[in-house]
Image 1: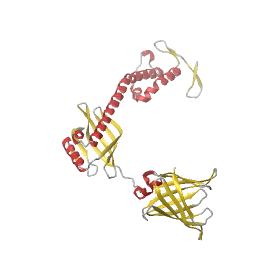
Image 2: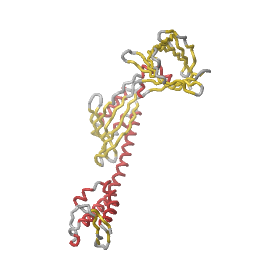
Image 3: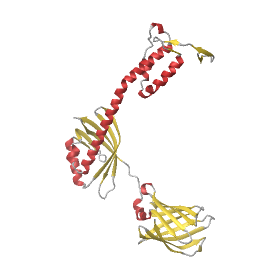
Image 4: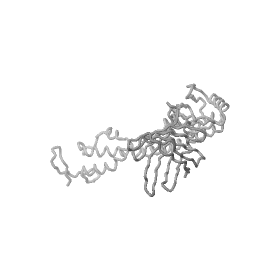
Amino acid sequence: MEFILDRHFTVQPVEKRVVPNGWSVSPIAAFSNLNQFFSGLARKLFFSRLLIRCSCSTPTHLTGDPFMCLLRNLLIATLATSSLLPVVFAEEDRQATEAGAIRKAVEAYVTAFNQADAKALADLWAPEAVYSNPLSGEQVVGRKAIEEQFKELFAAVKAAKLEATTVSIDFVSPNVAIEQGIAKVIRPDEAPEETEYSAVYVKQGGQWLLDRVTEEVVPIVASHYEHLQELEWMVGSWVDHDDAATVVTECSWTRNNNFLTRSFAVQVGDQIDLAGMQIIGWDPAARQIRSWVFDSDGGFGQATWSKKGNRWFVQQSGVLPDGRKSSSVNIITYVDDNTCTLQSINRTVDGELLPNIAEVQIKKN
């Protein structure tokens, strides 16, 4: 015997029922088992509307029994969904195959472009295809016109190379698909030109051909790399070692090459005595290289950089952890990509002149 709470929240027994084939089951147990069996299909294949549309017309001996009505509707819905499963899976397989064919068409397009083969490129477009220029907005219509445009491009720009990355492929119908991607055109001695494109493919004669292509130029992220690239040799791990201490400096670019970061640690014996970070960047207002430094004791400073020959003069001022003001001129001399020297002159603390620090050699690991 099973029990349920009625609408007055009192415990009531649930009777067994006999369905036409002699299967004896309680409504709650039967519904629970069926629900577990069918709910996965119902969730995945979005056929819940069938449960609503199925009428509750039952045989005479079951009329008025809501449980049997629900059971019948569940069975009808399950039969409907299970019969469509092969169709769904077949469509998924077909789309996967067609998507692979489109990706091969993209590869063929890149190959033809990089070989400067205007005819082969044009053959990958539909006869009445339309290409929209992202810069001028001009539309080129037809395979022949597209071929002529590529001939002009290859004549004007030698050794241009194309890279294309497919982001997504969506099917509008069995014979129409939309590919979203990113293209990059690389020309000698020029910055790469990157665009986001949308390509409409149509299937004609068993081949996927380009029908429409639109592009948008990807905004160029500003970078001060050109002003800092003379310091690129600093990137890497550097070690300055003597009998008193070892100084290890790690230098790397930040994203977009707008700054160089240099983290340093001064090790005395087996203990880190001092650590910190320096950030080097380009000041577009003052039009010069600047840097900022912070150490683990609470001191900080800033500096301006200037170059004379193979030497960098770093005019630095700062505040010590106890509040006193300091200044110095650090001279960094480039020897080669793996060697430099460092010395510090004109050192002061609160206006009092301190001894210079002699030149030391620093090697890259």
